[in-house]
Image (cartoon, rainbow, N blue to C red; front, side, top):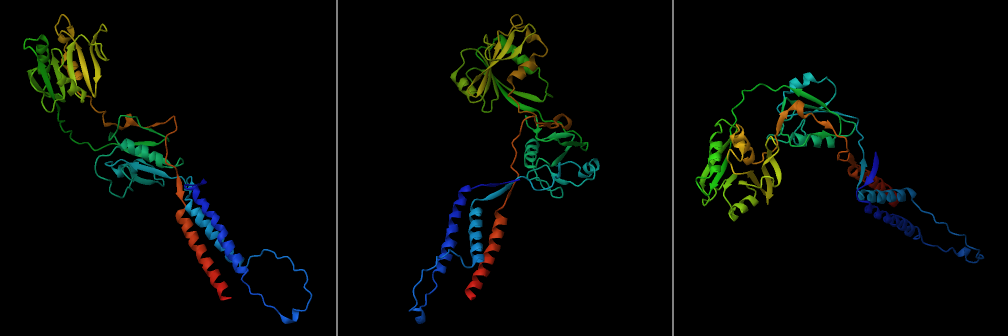
Length: 382
């Protein structure tokens, strides 16, 4: 542990130590001089040298200590380091059976808390609502002292994760408690709106796209609502992707893509930008380039069996859907064993373990002030 000052300039107040010294010197020179007539005719001898002496030394010491403590208080002292004995923290993910967790953990002295905002004690109700368990784990690891031990009790399927693998600054006990078996509810498919725009109704690519989109199973996790119209038709208000057949690209579509849209074009620039799809011979079939905040996807054309045999493959509809589907956020849930935190190889940012000494200094100043008043009252009485 070490002592530190948050506001070192507060020590300038130590210059006030001269005030009690001056007060005692001035009071010492206030004694009256009395002339005795009998001593008037004595020969005046050499006066002895006067030494600097302070009266009421204990009162002076109390006042000096009071000023010094006030100056230190202004400097806001803190004590760095943890003075507590090492603790064992057990963080439980809300929803886990606490009784089952206690059976899996040896009965040793430990502090049980919910892995939730504020880390409330286990006997309190955890905060409601979804929370990021990954962020809470990193926060708890940064707040605990280096000597503290940490055990985390999690269900076999974790929610509230992010895209980054959890890395902590300490080795932890990762305890998985099986969750109660519930009947799995059917998932609601995600629906996207696709605008299919064409300049001529006899375009070969138009037939390929219509057939590929119509082949998608209604039970798929992703469903496409198709808006199939001529190139002059306006885009729906909630359009997620556009297939544009024809050239040139209108400015309206370019502006829409620049605002974050996703459009697929059939042209010869499939190798432009990042490669998204290659055939077995390594030929680039689709590429992606950025346009503002959106993406332009170039699909190699023309879409005929002779020029692009991939249109005959059974997985062409899935490939097409993968090109058009907006980028999904990373999964927020996974099996607990697969996301067990790893020990970081580099130093991670940590909260400084410190103790604020302001309250203790305030108490000490109050005690010294009472002592100073007692001494001053006694002096006035004499």
